[in-house]
Image (cartoon, rainbow, N blue to C red; front, side, top):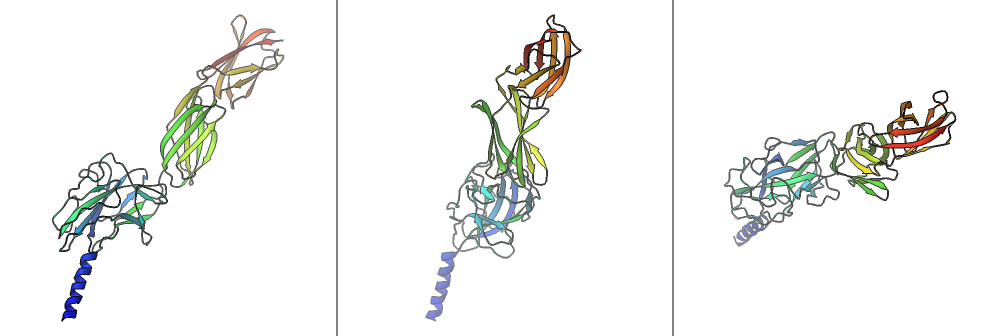
Amino acid sequence: MKRILLLLFMVVAYNSLFASVSQGHWRWRKDDGSEITATWMADQDQPATISDASQNIRLRIELYNDDVNSNDPDNEVLQYTISGGSDWKTITTDAGTNAFVLASTSPNVTDLEPTTQQITGANFPFESGKVIVSTSPLPSLPVSPYSETEYEFCIKPTANIAPSTTYEFRVQETNHNAGYTNPVLTTAATLPVTFTGFSLLEKNNGIQVSWTTGTEINNDHFVVQRSTDANTWKNVSTVTANKTGSYSYFDAAPLSGKSYYRIMQFDRDGKSSATSVKYVELGKGKMILTVTPNPVVDNINLVVKNYEGNVVVTVRGSDGRTAIKQTVNIAANGSAISIPVRGKVTPGLYYVSVTGSGLKATTSVLIK
């Protein structure tokens, strides 16, 4: 009898020592409102699908205590794994190689604010839990005997998230009883690259073009484009994707005047997206125009520097009358233009003007 009583005592002591709360129902929602008003992404205990990896998402999980003693989920953490896997990874504010992080900040909820009951639970009295935005592991907050609570985790995908993948989540060290499942989240077949920054900086007689990304799923490369009018674009550099999320290109031969830049992003499947357009003004009014040779016999040979795009070339006599006027394209900085003059004008002194978008240069030429 003593042995039986001792055995029963040891069983009770063991269960008390290792008792924990149990993970119950769950539900996904957007990070677009308070812990009461945010939009649900799917029904309770049903998977959700995300197609934009740049946005915060929130996971509501019920924790319940069906024990005669109070149990505390303190020091427990949110984890994920690829569905069917056993390599559970802890979600913190540090990304590393993880596919998810705690969001750190949210415009709608604050870390450790109390929760109210939002999902259908295990039919126990409800006690407030916490919203988790940056705290890990969970703080001490005992759940009374035969009671339930809810935690809401605000998380964000990282550049390591994979398309067409199903992830499972759990609160580590909680009990998992029959009739309950782990939260499931699926990613879409393609997840767009999201730009989080784009800037232009004039330095060292050039333009530093910098940009950052939030996520890069299926990304192949970027193309830096430049324009004089924000309509006709020229590729000036190709930058290979690197998953660091930070990129730059130095334009060592920028155009004079106002130049527009944008970044084009290309997926491996050929799809593309673009940043907004930004411009910088460098050396306004300093288009450089030279004529060689001078005097001229058959053709006026012009070299235009610090400009790319369409220009209007006008040749006027010393009396101010227009002798020749035509539109030509400066394909590259420093390109040469040849304007035939034999048989079109009489010998004498002429003035050649080249007019572009916001810029103009004039020089004199002697035609024999």
